[in-house]
Image 1 (cartoon, rainbow, N blue to C red):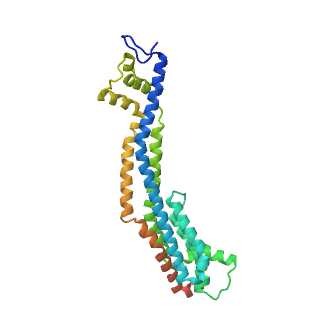
Image 2 (image 1 turned 120 degrees about the vertical axis):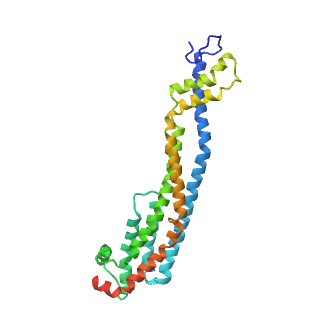
Amino acid sequence: DLQICQHRAPTCCTKKMEESYQAAVRRERTQSIQALNFELKYMIVGHITAFQEAFESLLRFAENHTSSLFETAYRPMAKEAAEPVKELFTDISLYILGAETTVESAVLRFFDSLFPLVYSRLINPGITDLSEDYTECLRLTRQDINPFGHYSKNMVTELSKSLWASRMLSQALSLGIEVINSTEHAAVSRECSRALVRMQYCPHCQGLTLIRPCVGYCLNVMRGCLASLAELDAHWRRFISTLEYLANEMAASHELEAALAGIWSSINEAILHAQLNGPQLSATV
C-alpha cells in the first residue's frame, strides 16, 4: 500500500512511515530556510536599529540646538516657542518612520504657530496680550502675509530632499524583513513533499541510509519545491539595487545630518527677515 516509495525489491517501509517521512521533510525544509534567513534578517534588523538610533540622535541634537536659538537670541518668545519646536521635530520623526504626513505640512504648521509669537514679541513688543481670536487670525493668514519670505519654502525644499531618502530607506529595510518572513511560511505542496521523500528517505526503505542524492537530482527537486518563490528573485535584486541607491543618496546630496543641523539656521534667517520688514508687516496685518 505504499504511495511514494514503491520498489520492486522487498521494502521495510509502511504507509505510516511514508507519512512520517512527509512530516519530516516539511519540518526540515522549514528549519533549513529559517536557518538561512536568520543571518540575513539579523543583519537587516541591525541596520534598522542602527539607522533609527542615528536619526533619533540627530533629531534630538537638532531640536536642542533649535531650542537654544530661542533661549539665547529670542528670549522673549522662547517659552512659548518650545511647543511648536517640539511638534516640528515630532512630525519629522513620524515622517521618517512612514507616517501619512509630509515635510511641507510639518514645516508650514511650525511657521504658522511661530508668526503670532514673532509678531507680538519681536515686531510689536508693546502688545501685552493677544486674544485667542487675533492669534488664530495671524496664524491662518501667515501664508498670505508671508512674513518669513522665501526662507520657509527653502526649508521645506532642503528638508524634503534629505528626509525623503531617509523615509524610503527606513520603509525599504522594514519591507525586506516582511519579504523574508513570507518565504519562511510558504506552504510545502503535496508534490514537493512527495518529491523530497523520494529523494531523501525512499532509499532508507532499502536499507541505504548513507546514500545522498546527486547534485543534479537535488537541484531539480528544489527548483520544483521553490518554484512559487523563484519569481521573487528579480524583484529582490531590484530591491537591493534600490537600497544601494538610497544609501548613496543619503551620503551625498541628501545628507540627513546636514539638513537637520541646518534647521536652526533657516529658522533664524526667517525670523530676522520678519524683523527687518516689521513696519510693513504691521501695516499689512
